[in-house]
Every structure is written in C-alpha cells, then in structure tokens.
Length: 605
Image (cartoon, rainbow, N blue to C red; front, side):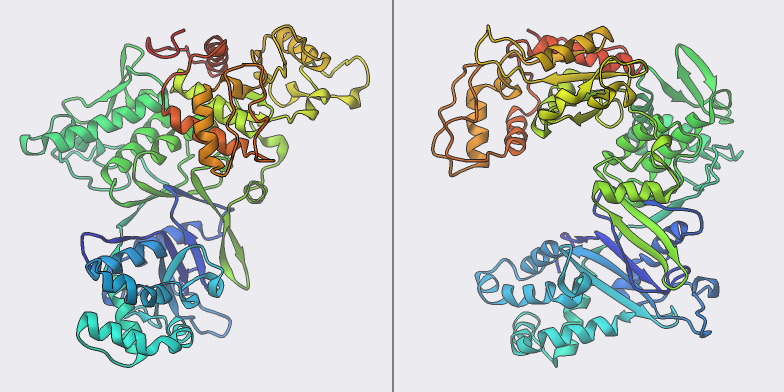
C-alpha cells in the first residue's frame, strides 16, 4: 500500500498478559485523550505497560516477538498460560480508502474489486461481537511464547467461514492486482499482512508516577534523557537558547511550554527561564522570579507534564495519575489544553474530576478473579456516574462547579455557550461554568431563595442555591408584543435571583431564537430540514420562529448547531444581547476569581 497514506490506530486489544487472562479486552483510543479509571490493583498500569511493550511495529508488520519476561504471562489454576493475543483496531473507512489508493483509484477497482475488499474489511470475524461493531476492523496477532506472532488462528478460521462464498472473487483480485494467487487462507493472510504493513503504529511512552524535575550535572542537551524528570533543567536551557541548526524546532518547544503555563494559570505574563548553572527552573510570576522549589509542587508537576507532552508530541503518551499534587481545577485546565495539543494521551486515574469532559474517552477498569482485568467503555452519563461510584465517590463528595447557568433546553445551551466563548475565550464550559436545564414546566417549582426557614410549602420548591450559590438563569419571555407582561412565576424567579445578586436574563423577544438574524435562521433551518416547505421567518422579535413550518417537530438543537456554524466566531449584536452576555461573562469571571477582559472588537454595540 501507499506508505504516505498510513492507517491510524484507533484501538488496542489484549489478553494473556499480566492481569489480562480472560476474554479479549478492547480499548478504544479514538479520542484525543483516553482515561482509565478504577481502583487499585485493577490493572490500569498493566494497560500502559502492554501499550509500551506490545504496540510495536515489528509485532504487527513482521510477526517478530517481544521480550519474554515470565512475570508478564499469567499463570492459571491449571498451571498453564493462555496464549498472548494483542490487536489493533482501525476504522473500516480508513482501510477501504487505503486499498482504493493501492489500486490507483481506477474505475475497474470501484466497479469490480471494491465490493470484494469491503466484504473482507467488514467481515464479522474482524468486528466486535461478530458483527455488532464499532466501525473498526480489529486485527489480532497471537503467540504461545511471545517469541513470534501470527495472525490469530481463531480469527482466521472465522474469516474463512464468512468469506468462503467469495473465494473465487478474492482469487481473481489477487491475480489481477498482485500477479499471483493461492487458496483462500493464504490469500486472506496476504491481504491482512498488506493491511498491517500500512499501519501507523505510534511509539508508546509511559510517564511514571514518581517524577520530579532534577538537574543531572551534565552538559545541556536538547534531548530528553529520562521520563522521570532527571536532566530536565539542562534540556530546557538548550531549548531556551538553541543551537542555530535547531533554532526553530527547539525554540518552538520552549514557547509551547510557556504557552501551556499561561493558559492553565490564566496569566499572560507567567513564564519559565533557566539559570546559567542549570540547577533548577525559574518561574517569572507576579513580577517576581522564583526558583521552582519555592513554589508549590503542583507548578513543578505542571511544567514536567508540559515538557513530556512537548517532547513526545508524535507519540502515544501514557501518564500515571496526572492528578498528583494538582488542584482539581488546575487538572481540568491542564487536560483541556492537552486535549487540543494534537498529541494522543492515555491516563490512569483514581480521581473523578476528569469524568465529565465530553471530548475524553472514559474507560472503567475493574478486576474479576475469573476474568482478570476487564475494560468497559463509559459512554453515557449513566456509565460515567457508575465509574464515579466505582472509584468510591458519593454525591456528597462532589465539588460544585464554580458557576451554573440555568437554561430551558439544549438549544439555549448551544447559543449561550457560543456567545460566552466569543465574548470571553478564556471561559471554558465544564471548567469555569456549567449549563443545566430546568425545562419549561419545572420553572414553577424552582426557587432562588434559601430553604432554611422557607415561607409556604417546602415540598413545592427546589432550592437552586443548594446546587450552587453562584448561579444565573436565562428565561424566554414568551411575549407576543413589547407590552406583554411576564407571568407570575418568571417575575418571582427574577426577583429571587436579583435579591441574591445573581443574573436573571429574560429575553427581549419571545424566545432565545429571536436573537438570531432571520436569514441565518432560515439557512440553518433548511439545512437541518431540507423538506421544509414554508420558510416564512421574519425579523419580528415577538414572532414564533417555529410557527407555520411544514415540520411538526423541528429539531431545535440541530438548528442551533447549524446557526453557530454559520456564525463561525463572528460577534452578534442583536437587541439586548450584548449587555446581557457581558453581565453574564463578568459574573462567571468573578465566580472564578478572574478579571473579565474584553477585546475591543468583541461585542461592540
């Protein structure tokens, strides 16, 4: 296949290694960061060790063995060891595209051979649970001793059973494309080998739990010598003042580390510098220059993880317990930066503070005496809540978000998050604030008052202050004209929020959608619902944007997503939008001990 179009690894499979001795366990690595969460001795560290030892090009491309440590092989009650099986998952679409490129994108391939290759790639033998798949093609390698690997005999047997009816077609394809053919099994074996030869297998590196920035007394070198932190001051000095031939490369690395510090500490003036003797790292913060040992251990860990992430930017970086010595909020900010760095990460954790980030893949790691280590993807909110309980957290242990904004539904959240991000890019949902839904009818049962000595019937109300004391609310006015009064419930909520100094934003027009220019709304509407016949949407701020449509149940959330895609970062000045967004942003900043900073071009009335 074309070596310039390598197939990226999106998953890892394992059994027969250390605490893995039951059924094959599958790990999805498609997210920019994968977090392994579970109690002690469940097998989290063994996943990282397996990635570094077994996710190797020579295993999958050449069938070569790995270092055979007897302690790496599980011993069962029968005094026997199960076979070592290691595999990778790749997206089926990526494999199909690679084969098409191999055939030169010829019309003959598309018409005759593409269906044959598609049958191979989508064969149930190469999917999870025999066909109930995740969109991946899983390629499994097996070894009895670890000294040499071959394609899994069980997977090959299943493939032969599923593909026997296209044996002639596969033979014709082999003869036409490669000039030779054979029986079905060797033909499939060669096709799989050619697929594996085009895998883009990253180097996996583990950053251990015991890590500390220390000088090694040697000469400065731009190369990372150890993953424990030894020699980092000398390496940073080489990056700070690089040799001419490495100037752009190394100075960019030094800039990236300082950029991470500025982002996570939310201080545009903070930076590191290395003294002449390379004995430590100096941090310039609050107009003072302090050696690293005079600051908290968290800053040292932050710099160290930044160094590792920068050095290994093309690798699969495995970090054990990144939460060590880091405040939960700083940990969230660090992870938010790393997720957007372009480097792939696998983390182990005992903390629940990473479980609510939607861009992170969460995997529950548990252990069974009969099955060994078990990996379970935590996809839904319920799954992630189960992981939290599995870690020993209870509802009373949860730390409140710094600020909560209450909105009626999902589409309100999409618009609001966009407006906040444009007005103040430093604010990140899930770190500085959270958005929660109250639903239209539930509003009557909410209160912004204390519930210690309530008036009236206590059971009739849910106190929002018990959930978070830094709160704001956005309410649709539902007005049909400018003089229409608010209903009694909305008047009560606004007054209760005002009494606590909390923002209560009532939309100027009928609903939050009335802030959207009519032309943008119509464009988004027709993209989401191409069959819509009536697009009679006017700029009347009190009109129902969803009335008179031929769609009985318009997808408001999808329409909102298309609207913000159309806006693409531009500021929107509509009605009282600017002043309300500014008030909300200022309130969130105060709740996070951050001074609001408005760029001159942003949200200018």
